[in-house]
Length: 290
Ligand code: ADP
Ligand code: MG
Image (cartoon, rainbow, N blue to C red; front, top):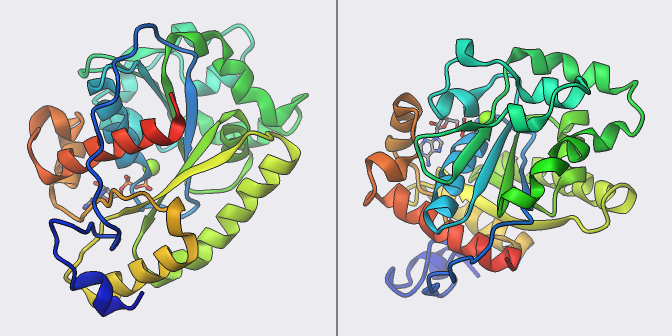
């Protein structure tokens, strides 16, 4: 479909992907929690919206009555900071949980301002993990083992990966049922996506037969630029149904939320960003079949 065709369609009938808009019903409430569907938020490129999407998808799933655990897997700790948890408040982090057999994940969980949304934090300690993991037996499954005690307590666990395809990210993929790939609508993003989908396939072949790409999420979309619209057409052409109907548009409100230390639905509940992440949560529930 050409660029013109894609964006001349009436906005109330067609979404930003050019596909007909669907109204997703509110998902059924869950009667009992768990076992968790585990999702990795992955892209080896930084600044594409992984952490923002982890926080806001997580919060919207919690708003739909799901119990959600977010795990910070980036030594920069942006997810931890983004949920308002100060570095000096940290006792146990995901580093301890993975690499110190005396530490249990049960003691590393923090609740957040959003009911139903919990966090396992990270800090710079985690930067040593890749090297230390190399000598572990079953090194790719270290995170999966660490998560086991809490899988029954949550409906979703979302792993916010660092911008690399190293051993920590491989651990996340090995522990997951699904992968969400946030991407910015830029030409060069497409090349990186091929390497990323290759990695997902390798992990599926060798470590985790059940791994699937839940979806590709276009973030920071600016429909006013023809470049973004062209890349969108190309992304749909190449990845088709793998691309979520939900598109996250560019807005200054997200940089504001990182300052707020809270998900956007808590302080701007009727903003466009809130509506988009709510829609994404419904799509994720639909695609995860939970
Ligand atoms: P990553 O985790 O992939 O590195 P982040 O989620 O930290 O990416 O986002 C990078 C920056 O872009 C942050 O400053 C964030 O506030 C901002 N950002 C995220 N989503 C949007 C958006 N939809 N519109 C504008 N800025 C955004
Ligand atoms: Mg991040």
